[in-house]
Figure (cartoon, rainbow, N blue to C red):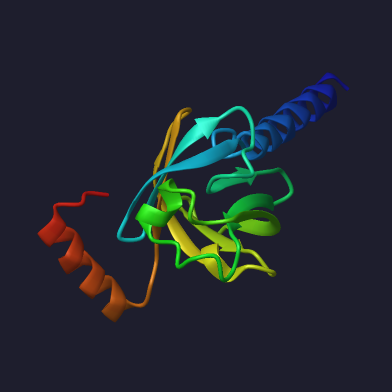
Length: 154
């Protein structure tokens, strides 16, 4: 009888421990992020407490939901100079995210494809998120050469 109780308790604690690891696998990601810097498809975000509708930002939510403040289609081409000026008009969009590996995210906004794609999480701390957009091998090679000439590091 005692052995069965110990086995039951051990299995419950093991199950609880595994579930707790799943829940906390993305605690740093599930926050509000505002774009701070953009270098050749490397997006650097800083953590914010409040979601701002007038600047480029993302808010990762549980259940793989995503809220984005993205440039309105037709309000500009989204280059860095326009992002930091008042040239772009932003709208709030609802999207989805999925962690495809330990360090890769797939992001989809059905009504605004500006941020659709696969991204590598190259840095994730409590205050900073750095996403690098993934492309096909040929495009990646071209972008890497551009990054080397501009001394842009991941």
